[in-house]
Structures are given as C-alpha cells and as structure tokens.
Image (cartoon, rainbow, N blue to C red; front, side, top):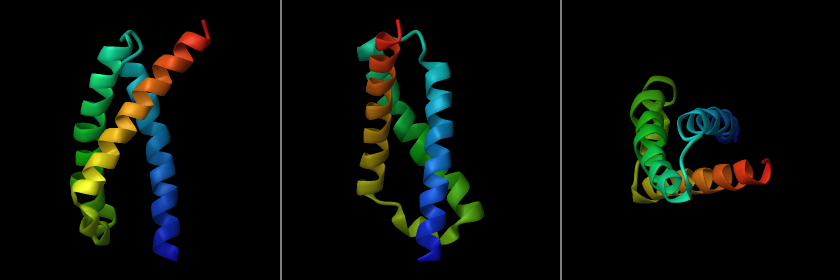
Length: 93
C-alpha cells in the first residue's frame, strides 16, 4: 500500500510538471502539431525519463512496469495533454 501511495503522489507531481513543460514548449502549436508533439513528448520525455532515468535511481522496483501498456499510456497522456492544452488555450482567448 505504501508503494502505491508513493507511486500515485510521484505520478501526480510529475504529471503537473510535465504539463507545465509541455505548455511552455508547445504554446504556439496548432492542434495537429500539438497532438504530434504531445505523442512524441509522452513517448520520449515522459516514458523514457520516468522509466529509464527516474525509476532506476529512486524507485528500482518500478522498472518491472516497463511494458507496452505503460508505453502506450504515456503516449496517450501526451495526446490528451496536447488536446486539453490547445482546447483550454482557445477557451481562454
């Protein structure tokens, strides 16, 4: 239970930080470009950084979660992040 709580808190904090980073990087992209960038961001930045840099250093037991499902959910995170960012950006104008 404790590991799950730690994982949830780490995911929440990282999601917010990655969202802020993506918004800063993609603030001028239109929807199609943002979605492509979001998918790449999810794969390269979020998945690779989480599973190959952060996890081995801080949470070595989390390396067991490296699989196709985790990879695809991180790509999906990037797509949703990009779509939400562009949609909310338009709504605030």
